Structures are given as structure tokens and as C-alpha cells.
Length: 379
Image 1 (tube, helix red, strand yellow):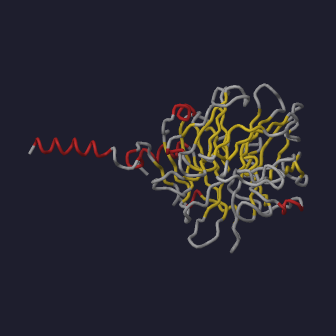
Image 2 (tube, one colour):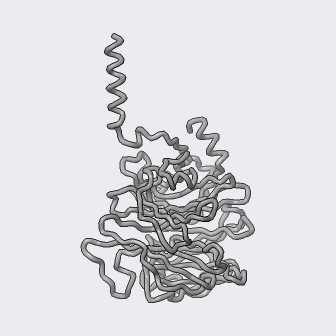
């Protein structure tokens, strides 16, 4: 019996490599999707699609602004404020009248000019890309105004300050040739273009976009930026919209002047609309929609925990967190990710949280200490 048993083990060990990657992956998963005590409803409206929020945390460490469209990726932009770190929300606040004309997912960002003047900027994409500005921490806003003779999709998914140049910012977006110019038309087959655009006056005005990458073979889009802990490297995490490859990443070590060739990320980071923030201990938390083929959580709202070095070297990371059980094949998780001074993550997104009902906006709270405890218990 022993020789037969040894042969069986060898056969099983060899056959294990034929199993789907998710059955072989060693990275653990912590499931918070059913923990209703962590969830706060930001906005819900019977019969109405509410989705695609982004957030910004102000310097007091507790005030969070959230913007989102009343519709699927477009529609009147809504604004809410939390003054207690996302525990409660204000309800819809007054906004400029022409925010109702938004054609795209809005994004909100903090910027500071060379003189130290702080402002908030809100983008609305497609053609032409438009910009709204607040210089009183969101109490009042200018109407949306044209930012340039160009446009794009999910403008701007990410905005980053340039090191050593006060008031200079880089931002990134993509287009599939339909919205970059007025009356533009997409190629056949479609070609996706990744763009970078810069501001030298603290986000008030923006220059002509520069193309970083284009391809018909892989459709890289929705860039999510993250800077290395030493500040010297920028990474853009990229959705792959054709679904023929994993998500990708590109790196710049010269403040966006040049970029590496795109390469695939691990399956544990394959998804849409990556949004990253650092925990106080230096680990990264990245929120996104899971789109990895064969993933048991495909279509759900996920977070990845790991180090910047994991992204650089292609390692799978430390842990995955399921934040929401989406009752739809894919439609969820354009997230906001904020970190409070005590290390609490406040993550905000939309999803189909109730089967057969339109999506709505929620936020979740957790600390990595809590995730470590649940991970050790196999939760």
C-alpha cells in the first residue's frame, strides 16, 4: 500500500498546478461584507440609480466630502459632508446649478498652490472636461467651467503633487477616442489612450494632455496613482477593459517625465478603479472592483493589503478584504479611500447591495489591527 500511496501523493501534487490559480493562492481573505455594524448608508433613493462616488478628507482629520452622480456614470452631481469621520452624513447639500449637466463620474481632490492657498477641485469629464473650484473647503463652489479643448473618461481618476515644485500637479485619465476632441470617433478596433496633464498654479488651470500609452490589444484605463514610501517612485494601477489580461501597472522615477512599459499585476490586484492609501504602519490598502477571471469574489467590492514593494516585484500581497457582496455581475466599487488620524480606514462606494434594487452609496470602516485579528482566526 505504501508505494501506491506515495505515487498518489506525487500525482496529486503535480495535478495541483492544474487547478485554477485562486485555489492555489496563499494570500488569505477576510470577509467584512456581512458585518452590517461597519456599514453606513451615505445615500439611497427608491427607484434611483446612485453610484460612482469619490471622497476627500480635509486636514482636520474628520471632515470628509463625498461627490457622486444621480445616475449611472453621469447625471446631476450630488455633494455630502461628514464631520465625524464618516459615521454620519449631511444629506444632499446645495451645489451650483450646472452641476446637473455633468456627463461623467465626478472626482474631487485637494490641491495647494505655491503660496500655500488650499482649494478643492471637482472634475467632470467627457468633452470638454470641466472643472469646479472651492476655496472654502467645499462650503461654496464655482460653476463647472471648461478646462481645455479636450476631454476624456473618468477625468481625473488621480491627481498627485510633483515633488519639489510647489503648486505643480499631475493628473491622469483615459479616452477611447470618442471624447478627446469634439466630434471625435473611435477607431475600429477601438484604441484606448492613457493621458497625463499638468497644472502649475495649484489646480486652477491645466495644460495640454500628453499621451503616455495607447493600444488596441489591451485597453488600459482608469489610472489609480500611488507614490512609494520614499516618495521617489510614482505608480499608476490600470484597469484592463478588454478583459484579456490582468490589470497593469506603470512606474515613473522622474516625476512623470518618463514611464516604464506597462506590465501585468498579480491576480490579487486585478480589478477596476484602484484607489490607494497608506496605513500608519506603512502598508497599503487599495480598494477596487474584483474582475479577475475565476475569482470567487468576482464583481464584488474588494480591498488589497500589502506593501509598495509587492507592486514593484509582482508579489500577491498580504491579504484581501471583501468589503461588499455585490448582487450584480460587475457594477460596483468606484471607491473613495480615506485614513483617519487613528488609523481607521473609511472606504466609500456604490453597489447593488440588495438583489433586484438599484445601487446606492455606502461607507465601511476598519483598521488593519482588526483585519489582522480576523485574519489570524481565519475569518
